[in-house]
Length: 126
Image 1 (cartoon, one colour):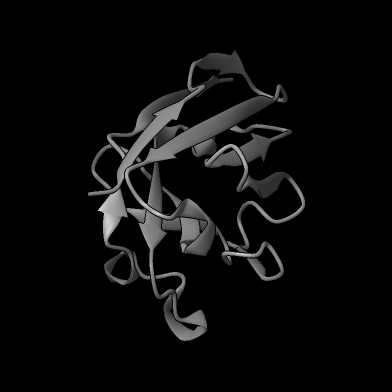
Image 2 (image 1 turned 135 degrees about the vertical axis):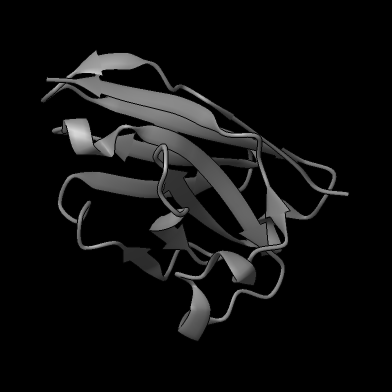
Protein backbone atom coordinates (compact mmCIF):
# COMPACT_ATOMS: atom_id res chain seq x y z
CA UNK A 1 0.00 0.00 0.00
CA UNK A 2 1.39 3.34 -1.04
CA UNK A 3 1.55 6.05 1.58
CA UNK A 4 1.94 9.73 0.76
CA UNK A 5 2.82 12.35 3.36
CA UNK A 6 2.78 16.05 2.53
CA UNK A 7 4.69 18.73 4.38
CA UNK A 8 5.73 22.34 4.02
CA UNK A 9 2.43 24.15 4.30
CA UNK A 10 2.25 27.25 6.49
CA UNK A 11 0.96 30.78 6.80
CA UNK A 12 2.76 33.23 4.50
CA UNK A 13 2.21 36.74 3.20
CA UNK A 14 1.10 37.47 -0.32
CA UNK A 15 4.03 37.51 -2.73
CA UNK A 16 6.12 35.09 -0.73
CA UNK A 17 7.18 31.56 -1.64
CA UNK A 18 6.75 28.06 -0.23
CA UNK A 19 7.96 24.62 -1.19
CA UNK A 20 5.73 21.65 -0.50
CA UNK A 21 7.07 18.12 -0.29
CA UNK A 22 5.35 14.77 -0.60
CA UNK A 23 7.22 11.73 0.69
CA UNK A 24 6.15 8.38 -0.73
CA UNK A 25 6.60 4.93 0.73
CA UNK A 26 5.31 1.42 0.20
CA UNK A 27 5.28 1.43 -3.58
CA UNK A 28 7.33 1.98 -6.68
CA UNK A 29 7.30 5.77 -6.65
CA UNK A 30 9.49 6.01 -9.72
CA UNK A 31 6.81 4.34 -11.85
CA UNK A 32 3.88 6.53 -10.71
CA UNK A 33 2.47 9.62 -12.27
CA UNK A 34 2.13 12.21 -9.51
CA UNK A 35 0.06 15.32 -9.03
CA UNK A 36 -0.85 18.13 -6.68
CA UNK A 37 -4.44 19.12 -6.02
CA UNK A 38 -5.87 21.70 -3.66
CA UNK A 39 -9.14 22.31 -1.93
CA UNK A 40 -10.33 25.56 -0.44
CA UNK A 41 -13.17 25.73 2.09
CA UNK A 42 -16.53 25.26 0.40
CA UNK A 43 -14.97 24.43 -2.95
CA UNK A 44 -14.30 21.27 -4.90
CA UNK A 45 -10.86 19.75 -5.07
CA UNK A 46 -9.03 21.28 -8.02
CA UNK A 47 -6.05 20.26 -10.10
CA UNK A 48 -2.83 22.20 -9.61
CA UNK A 49 -0.07 20.31 -11.40
CA UNK A 50 1.01 16.85 -12.54
CA UNK A 51 4.22 15.15 -13.60
CA UNK A 52 4.82 11.87 -15.38
CA UNK A 53 6.89 9.09 -13.86
CA UNK A 54 10.01 10.22 -15.71
CA UNK A 55 9.43 13.92 -15.30
CA UNK A 56 9.28 14.33 -19.05
CA UNK A 57 5.66 15.46 -19.10
CA UNK A 58 4.43 18.26 -16.85
CA UNK A 59 1.04 19.92 -16.63
CA UNK A 60 -0.21 23.01 -14.79
CA UNK A 61 -3.52 24.64 -14.11
CA UNK A 62 -3.78 28.02 -15.80
CA UNK A 63 -4.16 29.69 -12.41
CA UNK A 64 -0.66 28.64 -11.29
CA UNK A 65 1.25 28.52 -14.56
CA UNK A 66 4.39 30.64 -14.36
CA UNK A 67 4.27 30.77 -10.56
CA UNK A 68 4.38 27.12 -9.47
CA UNK A 69 6.90 24.44 -10.43
CA UNK A 70 6.42 20.71 -9.92
CA UNK A 71 9.40 18.40 -9.63
CA UNK A 72 10.24 14.91 -8.44
CA UNK A 73 13.27 13.11 -7.11
CA UNK A 74 12.79 9.42 -7.76
CA UNK A 75 15.92 8.54 -5.81
CA UNK A 76 14.37 10.15 -2.73
CA UNK A 77 10.79 9.04 -3.43
CA UNK A 78 9.72 12.65 -3.09
CA UNK A 79 7.47 15.00 -5.03
CA UNK A 80 7.82 18.78 -4.73
CA UNK A 81 5.79 21.87 -5.49
CA UNK A 82 7.66 25.18 -5.52
CA UNK A 83 5.15 27.98 -5.15
CA UNK A 84 6.25 31.54 -5.89
CA UNK A 85 4.37 34.83 -5.95
CA UNK A 86 1.68 33.39 -3.72
CA UNK A 87 -1.75 35.02 -3.70
CA UNK A 88 -4.56 34.88 -1.14
CA UNK A 89 -6.57 32.80 -3.63
CA UNK A 90 -3.90 30.09 -3.35
CA UNK A 91 -5.08 29.44 0.20
CA UNK A 92 -6.18 25.80 0.43
CA UNK A 93 -5.29 22.37 1.68
CA UNK A 94 -2.79 20.92 -0.79
CA UNK A 95 -2.83 17.20 -1.51
CA UNK A 96 -0.40 15.04 -3.41
CA UNK A 97 -1.75 12.11 -5.39
CA UNK A 98 -0.29 9.16 -7.25
CA UNK A 99 -1.37 6.98 -10.12
CA UNK A 100 0.36 3.79 -11.30
CA UNK A 101 -1.14 4.29 -14.77
CA UNK A 102 -1.63 8.01 -15.26
CA UNK A 103 -3.42 8.79 -18.49
CA UNK A 104 -2.44 12.02 -20.19
CA UNK A 105 -6.07 12.60 -21.11
CA UNK A 106 -7.18 12.60 -17.49
CA UNK A 107 -4.29 14.07 -15.50
CA UNK A 108 -6.53 16.89 -14.28
CA UNK A 109 -9.18 14.57 -12.83
CA UNK A 110 -8.97 13.47 -9.17
CA UNK A 111 -10.49 10.13 -10.23
CA UNK A 112 -7.30 9.35 -12.15
CA UNK A 113 -5.36 8.93 -8.92
CA UNK A 114 -5.40 5.92 -6.62
CA UNK A 115 -3.31 7.22 -3.75
CA UNK A 116 -3.70 10.42 -1.73
CA UNK A 117 -1.91 12.10 1.12
CA UNK A 118 -3.62 13.69 4.10
CA UNK A 119 -2.97 17.23 2.91
CA UNK A 120 -1.02 20.24 4.14
CA UNK A 121 -2.55 23.66 4.81
CA UNK A 122 -1.29 26.66 2.88
CA UNK A 123 -2.62 30.04 3.98
CA UNK A 124 -1.69 33.22 2.15
CA UNK A 125 -2.51 36.49 3.88
CA UNK A 126 -3.04 39.72 1.99
